[in-house]
Image (cartoon, rainbow, N blue to C red):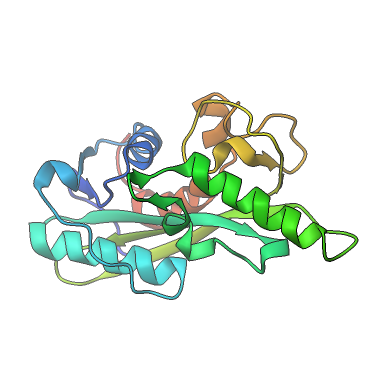
Length: 210
C-alpha cells in the first residue's frame, strides 16, 4: 500500500518555472503549501538515470533528504516514434545552447531530424507521446512513483504561445489544438502530467482534506 502524504508543506523539486506552475495548479485543491527547489537554494542534481522514473526519484530524494521535507519531482519528455523515442529522457538536453535552454531551437532540431529521415524513406510517421514520471519522496528515503502518458502527433510550424517546452508542436490524439494553443485548464485535464498526478492523488492524497 502506498504511503499517504500528510505534511502541510511540499517541495517541488524543479527549477523549471513552467513545471512549478503546473504542479502548484494541480495541487490547488489540497491543503498543501508548495515551494520550489530554487527558493530553498537546492541545487539541481545530475540526471544520471536511464528512465523517467529513475530521474524523477533521484531528484525527489535529493531534495527531500537535503531539506528534511517531502519533495515531489517530475521528469518528463517527448518521445517521437520516428526518432526511436528521442529526445525522450534527454528532452531538456536537446534544448541546450550556449545561451541556455531554448526549446524553439529544440523543436527545430526535431523537425530537421524528421525531414532528414523523410529524404531516406517514403513514409515517416509523426506520432509521438509525452511521458511524465512523478516521484514523491520523504526525508527517510521512502519514495512513491507514478508514470503517465498522452498520445499525439507533431505539427509544423509551431502553434501557440501557452504552455512550455515542446507544447507548441504537440497535437494530442483526437484534438485540433496543440498544447501550446490550449488554455491551462484544458491541458491539465488531459496531459501526461495530469495522468501521473491522478495516479499520485489516488495513492497518496486520497484522505487529505481539500
